[in-house]
Length: 248
Image 1 (spheres, rainbow, N blue to C red):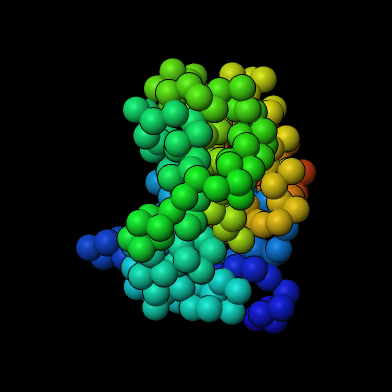
Image 2 (cartoon, rainbow, N blue to C red):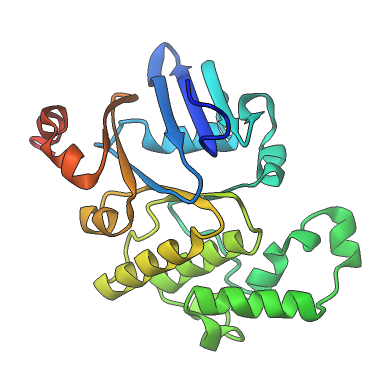
């Protein structure tokens, strides 16, 4: 077992069963601080379930998830968010009838509680933070546009921005470049490398060119278990991975 000072997130012996089927089976991995980790695997490997377990959407049957020394399996979803874990789902969940600025503003931490929302003011700190995030996500020139008029890729960036403005220590992204153009995927890779100066990123992705552009380490799942872990070169050469991906 690693020391708590060695990693940001430690998953050990994680298991979840649905009607006797083990979607995640005795899973263990460790995510370092300032690391981009990509989880790959064929459909049904348990990738999205792992994110559901970490963010508390699904409760584990057994095992441990430690984040900054805290046991997440005992916490509720909103407590996990407050602890510093942010999650982006496969489909962008933005407010299309609000502007880009308003989408980012409504995600600003001070406005997210009932009392915070009542006392919330668009002061200079909020405005500066929104504008900085908009620059980071390539939407500085779209701040006053309604989100519904953004391209699919820009909506993906906006949702990443809505996470970034909450300043999570761990940002989890489920297929962030699905439906993006090649140029948008390259810019998303650039964005992720820039934001890990302050946090770690856990990504599920099928686009292997994008995985190669961003991953410090890759974890390969099959039937809810880790079958390989390491660099892109390592996992591509691993006979277990080659066998699983034959025919996929």
